[in-house]
Image 1 (cartoon, one colour):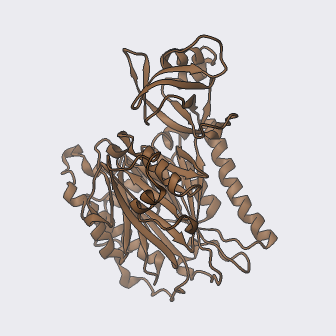
Image 2: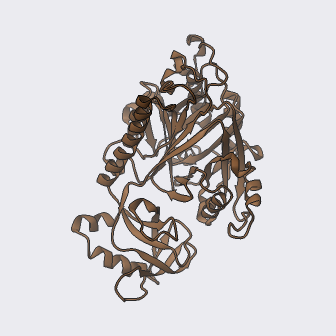
Image 3: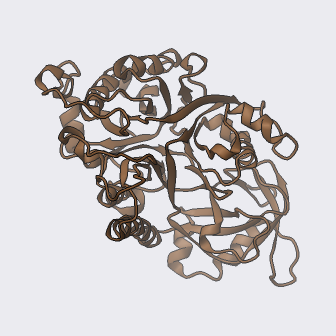
Amino acid sequence: EVAMKGGHVFLVVGVVLALTQLSSGFQTVPATIARLSLGSRGAGVSTRRLDASSEACALPLRGCARRARRSPLTSPAMNMDSVPPSPPIPEDQQVWGSAVAVGYKTIEEALEDAAGRCKQQLGTAVPDVAFVFVSSRYLEARGGATPASKKELGRIVDQVKRLLGVKHVIGTTASGVLGTSEDDGSPEEFEDFKGVSLCAARLPNVHIQPFRLTAKKLPDPMKGSQDEWRQLVKGPPEEEKPSFVVLAGQAFSAQGELSKLITGLDYAYSGAVKVGGISSGMIPGGVFASVDGGKCVDGDAVGLGLWGDVEVEPIVAQGCRPVGGLFEVVEAKGNQVLKVVEVGGKESGECTPMAALKEVLEQLDEKDVALAQSALLLGIASNSFQEDLEPGDFLIRQVVGVVVKDGGFVIGDILKPGQRVKFHLRDRDAAVAEAELLFSSYKRKRLEAMMSGTPSQGASGVVMFACSGRGRALYGEPNYDSRMAYLSTGVPVAGMFCNG
């Protein structure tokens, strides 16, 4: 997931994103959509948030069987005549709805079902923006299925606009999707299974600016001007304090353009929140948005700038722990790290990353050595000038492969000499402890604000940008992270499984 707060970039396993309505005069949400809000908690300035988190999961069989039998034409969610009309919702009130639809043969059918349930939650509110996450399984010919074409992916934006009456749409293909179930409002996660997650929000008095960027056409963030970057994303002056949601295609990220984009955005808008994810799946699909005809391209990045009556609050969970010493990159070529040297270590001089790893493994117990065989990650110091680095000060990257000839590592990012790195292990116990700490802290902060009478408003919805390394494979059970987010906020959860 891509998130940046206070100038530090996190490409990690979990992100919780919160959009907060800042204006006063908040009113209680009608009963038909009451679960989307925690209610008003004080006089004066009131707030409402849209949150986001992370996780990977296997398909619960009951969900598969239930949805696979249903036709979108007979879905109760689509029988709008049977639903009592919702009472009018105040125009200045932020409203959020989300749904996940799985088991349908086509993307179009899944979108119809998800949109129908979103509309029930939105009531009379017409959404301003919609996020769409489409399972990459629709691109596969597995089981004799006909893969969805690029042309079909390119029709998603127009279809969502037609179904919801929404102006702005952004989305991507993903190895899995997660969203609000139709049973009790709790989240369900579906990885490696055909499905669509759709979430939509009405954001009154919020400026929403979509943009699309093409690989190899970005300016050098170290040479270009701040105004050049602001014009690129069609953003406002820095004093407007915008926040950004960015979705990048796998090809866009693999060429090192994503790091350049995040660096450029931080240069143009220092300290602004940047959050999102990289498309995923065995067969690359791409990203799409309500710009340039809604085309789906793997070599592009799309995004939204948000500013005005809104606050964005990300919560980032890494789910791993550092091991061994700190190393500095001496030689690198693209995403290959070829030579490193230990910082403050013994006078052994430069060595290959493989040799450095061997030295680290010699210090670990048998359990961690075994864990390193399948859960090895590389943390990159997010601040080149910070001397004392804590566990949360690293950007987590996958170790994609090994350069056998040179003893180097292939990393899921572009590195340069002088950057400091540290090996990390993805660990269930560390992930559980971190998730519990983050979500309990979030909940405690809301309760303290309520008890003290401080103007504060809880979340309106949750969007999860999930690392595919989490979920059932990490926790041994499905829905762990999304359930934690749901229990901490009491609002719908939607999202995707990312490559970072």
